[in-house]
Image (tube, rainbow, N blue to C red):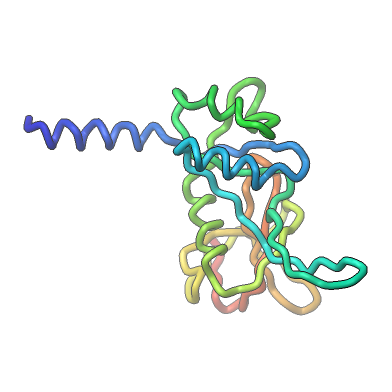
Length: 178
């Protein structure tokens, strides 16, 4: 085996050992946690949404976390301790003392939502509802739960591990049952 192929194999095995996890953070520490992880070279993901905030004298559009109290991070088991020691991190979400990885497809759906031009908001996580896949449009291939609110259809994209979700309006003709 050549030196290049050994390096590529090592890089591939390191990448495959990386998984996405949800971090529960102290109140209003999500951006601080994201920035510290980024500085340490650990890949964070903090979905945000723009909100109009009003003070006595002015209004200003600010970016707030989509899921209050949570930040996502991609790391290997060797990086678990440095992640836990980041200021503002309360815990790595999981069952018991074991962190529970978030499926790559749920993170990909969130990223596609964040880069789309469609307006989105946080939404309570639903346990009932029909699972659907978007078959056309900017979210094509994304799976979620379809619900109806005031004659409009909405697609709920959930992160099961933290029981949080985001909702986006969608044409019912653009989705099919899974």
